[in-house]
Length: 112
Image 1 (cartoon, rainbow, N blue to C red):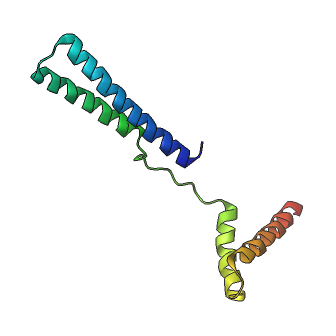
Image 2 (image 1 turned 180 degrees about the vertical axis):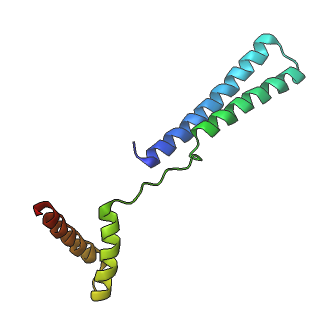
Image 3 (image 1 turned 90 degrees about the vertical axis):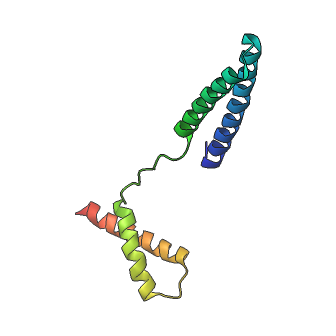
């Protein structure tokens, strides 16, 4: 499931849950013949439950950033070097040249 689909799912799920909670709240109030004060307390309880569930499902949890791989570090330096040597070449070509250099170095290390 990609990120966009996930966020749509969470949004739809939260909307469904909110509607379902309203329906349950009304059925409880009607069945128990609750007064306005009790209805207010019950509504507050349902609201706090919804807020807690939204906090748990929200994307507020910070993502851990992965450490750069040897390839990432190599390419970062290589692109800088290549850009200095060939300032007119586009980034796609620079990446291709960098990848070829990576393969050369990898082959050299493998044969040693």
